[in-house]
Amino acid sequence: MVKVTKGVIAAAGRGTRFLPVTKAYPKELIAILDKPNIQYLVEEMIGAGINQINIVHRPNDEKLRQYFTPDKELESFLKENNKEFFLASLEEIWKKAKIYFTPQDPNLPYGNASPILSVKNFVGNDPFVYMFGDDIVVEDKPGNYLSRLIKIYQQYQPAVILGAQEVPWEEIDRYASIKYLNDPQYPNRATEVLEKLSADQAPSNIAQFGRFVISNKIFPVLAKQGLSRDNELWLADANNTLAKNDVAIAEPISSGQWLTTGDPLRWLKVNLVFALKDPEIAPEIKNFFKKPNI
Image (cartoon, one colour):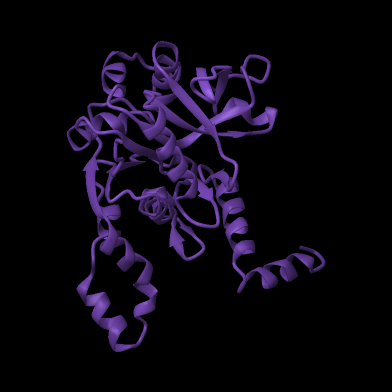
């Protein structure tokens, strides 16, 4: 059985939809309630048994490294004031995983596949988990869905496992749409993964989202791949090639929900979802929205 212990998080985007905030720091550090977006992803990986995590960031931007690096002065201050619990979640991460940081090669094109090429040496010949930095999986236990993707990879050894979820037809043009093949040997086998097609052209309203288990077969595909119509290097195009020439499995999420934080409106929705799941603050949030004129 192939063990999957490495994970890569794409956090090298410019975050233009969050400007001017992202002028100062990466959008992956924008908070969802009390933790930055990217910490939820790291905790999800750890929950699925990933203990080597490489965050691909913008060149010359050290903010993500600073966040995940212990700060002895801050720790001393919190200890003196009996407030160590504020850093408890980060301390758990430091105990359970090694975090690496790789600046994305500035010579690579923009796009959500370029971070993979930046970590080729880190990945080596091993399969790895790959996450988009602005996708969140809301579930009772972080890592449940990702653990299932890893188990499916171990069982069937496909070229790639894709996270998938049904979306409204009117939103499918925002994502990569999946076409399935009825194959008894490989459940949920995908034959096409087509990026940003209109509803009348998309093969389904099942969207690929930012959870993947990927074999090293991705590297020669990306090395030959041209740019998309947006002049970006899209992972969906590489997955489409693997689906046509090898085996790709698109496993729908059943327990939990995928949400994106890629723009301010959807980021706000994710905050509300997490707030309503928190037993301490959910009643106050509900009461707030019951007020007249809200």
